Image (cartoon, rainbow, N blue to C red; front, side, top):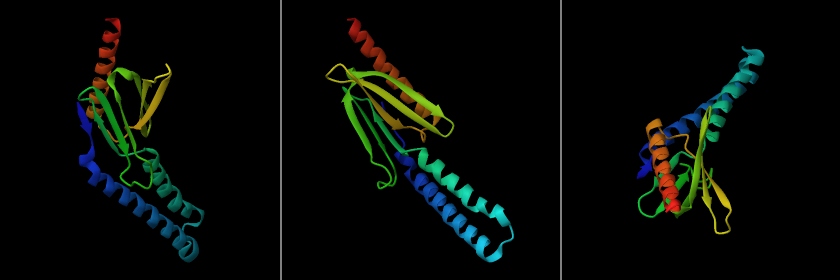
Length: 159
């Protein structure tokens, strides 16, 4: 199964540009209010607080582009940001039989996918991916595919 949200790159560029513009306008409004007009008094800090909060939410939601491919004998997972200078892209490819378990952490504004795979020295490695920008259907498809691989691995161990 292949899953990706690359078709929404334009939307994410628009949103990030909008967030940056809101932040810049908020900072300018704060300084204009503070040093020229002074109508709002101490409430003018809201011009800084609200845009900063929006910017932090957008940044902490994580990488926007998620690609997953389970065709063949290997699982391939890519996770990258639309702006390459903000975060380092994550690209992992490993055989399906190494997949041990997965967990999706869902907190108010972000979702993370944790995949445990086995390593050569009988240890497990936990890989982390941002899946906050996936739709509910895409997330359910991802869960179904990963569960199917884990089920096949357990059946193979029994044989």
